[in-house]
Amino acid sequence: MKKLKPKPHQFWAWCSTLTILAGAITAALGFYPLYCYIFLIGNSGLAIISWLWNEKSLVALNTGLASIYLIGLINLYLI
Image (cartoon, rainbow, N blue to C red; front, side):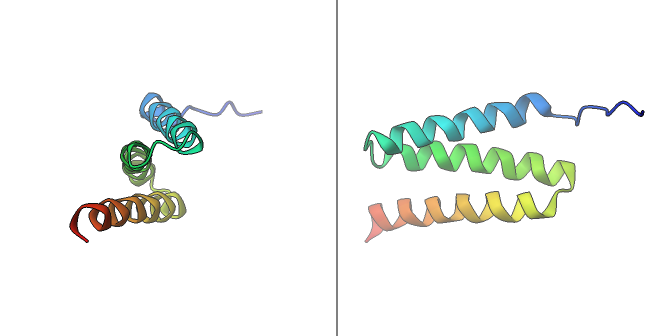
């Protein structure tokens, strides 16, 4: 059986994942708009890592989610 090599940048992927979990906790506690910033950082990080890994579905998911939070923050401050 072939041993799988770990993907590069695994540390940063875990940091982004923990950031997204922190965003979920702050959202559950109602800390708006703080959780938008936290989610934006976490999803942007995972989008970059996914791009480095050439995982197109994860790039689309995380870029889409980061865009949603960015639009929400723009809407909060400009409208």
